[in-house]
Length: 149
Image 1 (spheres, rainbow, N blue to C red):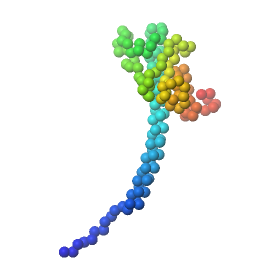
Image 2 (cartoon, rainbow, N blue to C red):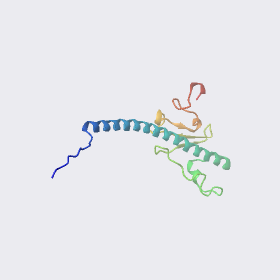
Image 3 (tube, helix red, strand yellow):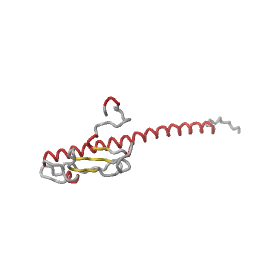
Image 4 (spheres, rainbow, N blue to C red):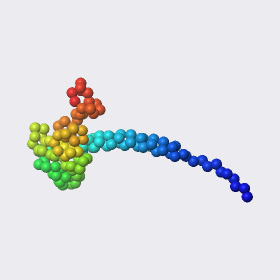
C-alpha cells in the first residue's frame, strides 16, 4: 500500500503573529474612537433631557402661572395631565440628578453637574446649565471665535 503524501496548507507562526498584531492595532484605534463618541453622546443626551425638562417647566408655568417648587410636581397627576406633564424625571447620563432651582433671574435654573457630579470642571466633568444650553462650548463643532459662542 502506497501512502500518498498530502501537501498541507497551513499558516506559519510568523504569519499568525502578524495577523494578530494587525487586529490588535485596529481594535485599539477603533476603541479610542468609540470612547470619544460615547463621551460626546452622554453630553448630547444631557442636553436633550434638559430641553425636555425645560419644556415641561414652561408648560407648567403657562398652566399654573408659576414654576413648580420642585421637579416632582411635573410628574404629578392633574385634571389636564392625568399622567403628569412628563412621565418621569430622567437621571443625567452619569446617573446623577438634575439640579433645579426656582425663582432665579431666568425664572428657573436647571443644571447637570457632569460626570464628576460636582460644580465646575472641564470636558465630561463640565456643568451644563439651562441658560446657556444652546451655546456650543469651545472645541465643539460649530464653535468659532467669530460666532460669539
